[in-house]
Amino acid sequence: MRQKYEQQMKKGVLEMLVLQLLSEKEKYGYQLICELKERSREIFLLKEGTLYPILYRMEDDGLVTSKWSEPRGKEVSKKYYRITGQGKETLLRLKLLWRAFSESVDEIIED
Amino acid sequence: MRQKYEQQMKKGVLEMLVLQLLSEKEKYGYQLICELKERSREIFLLKEGTLYPILYRMEDDGLVTSKWSEPRGKEVSKKYYRITGQGKETLLRLKLLWRAFSESVDEIIED
DNA sequence: TAATATACTTAGCAATACAAAGCATTATAT
DNA sequence: ATATAATGCTTTGTATTGCTAAGTATATTA
Image (cartoon, rainbow over all chains, first blue to last red; front, side, top):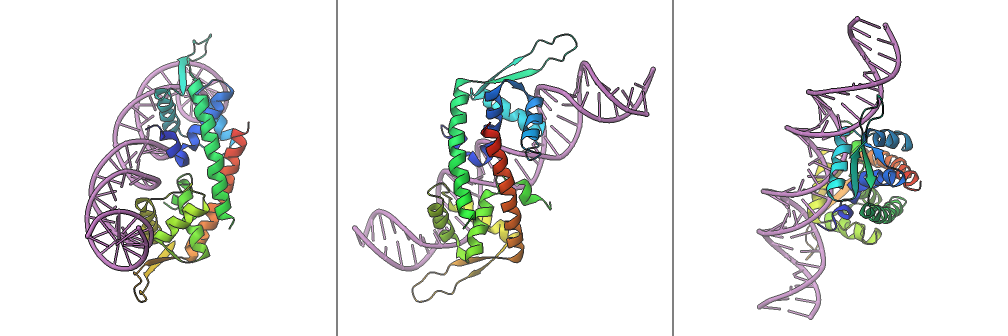
């Protein structure tokens, strides 16, 4: 299953976007959902049932790590995700694939 | 299930591409596989097990119609698919969605 | 005559995106 | 004071999807 993420490209866009956001700064789940909604102008409206399984999967695959924050004062403890070296590599690969994929689609639909 | 195709946007790229090819001229299954391979520069390498179910689905949904060719001489009979009015509408909608979708992705991954 | 290309079909599988629900806490509004 | 909404994480179940794999059949090429 070496090519897993590549093969899932069409579905793998979400993985790519999550990795992108995490490559900028470590974040927790709910935050990712909100940021994705904002930055995509309401196009990526992830449900928890979509995002969290993605995070668990990526953690299993070594693309991200997680750790619970120690809550300061009244704060609730949150689970922060951080991208790993392997995750950065995967993100790069996914971006290249996305370019090829989307350019190809564009060419075909523009006659 | 009115929004079916819209909701499946990420997976619906294949449907969009097939509709696009059919909007240019009626075609048969194998031909679609070959053309898609060519025009996408080897990026969309559809298997029969992927394409034919898509065609059946779209026929069920009234986006395309099919008819068997009467074989001339030695020719094998082929099942030609033609896009319908509803299929053209769907194609337009899918293209608009694709633009919004891909532009959104591009913005996010380009920081 | 064997292999390859063309052409369509189907069964079965793994992965995914989602709905939906639950749990717990904090903030806001009534 | 109490209800509601928002935040935050998790899990279960479901429909859809893309694919593997196999099967059927004919035509062409080696």
